[in-house]
Picture (tube, each protein chain N blue to C red):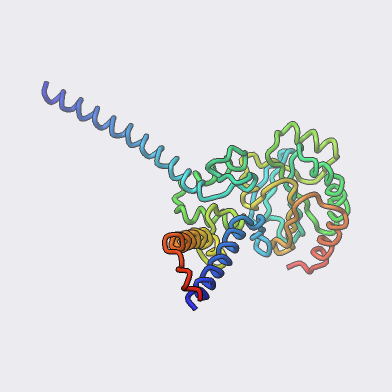
Length: 135
Length: 175
């Protein structure tokens, strides 16, 4: 009796693990497709990634990403596949090299410049030059 | 002296900022990295039930045209494409139409309307169009006798363009 109970319990646990495992792996594949799709701009959309767009092309691209993942391709290989066909303009984030570096440096330069200007202005307000200093 | 250094520092920062923001705003147009490279192979199931494999046409000059029935520019270029096929088929040109983002009945109706007699088939899963980096319709690829993509043309083709691109490719010696 006890052995039957143990066997049943073990079967239940195994079935639950299998079920959960299938769920987790399907979810993981979806996540991986979405991660790669987020790195690619939709070629027929305005400012949307392949993950965000509901266009037919974006849908077809997501299907290709899924297939390639299922075939064992690595995410970098899949991104490279699209870059080889559409060029680097398909990348949502420009690669950090060459002139593209300006895209990354530019906003920080603006921020740094703004902070520097603010500090300088604050200093002038708090410590105005004495009237005799200019002479 | 110190204020001069500060001015130079801010000037350099400003230039970097302007260049960076301009580069971020001006995304480069969709490029055609496949031009100059071997044309990706594909098998197309034709509307008439036949099958066509690109790699089996090596030695021919190939024109691959991506189109859809709802596309006005595709309708505009249709007579030119049929003329291309009729004019150059005897010289070794093969014209292939790949119908994308369309419905089969609409595609067949347009083929009948314009009397398209060259090879035509659908790409319902969008596999071929992604292999070629297609971003819209119509797009036309000109492939030389060695199977190399010579040119990608966006928008409707004209007779002048066809003559200018196709004749040198046909004149080139077979590999």
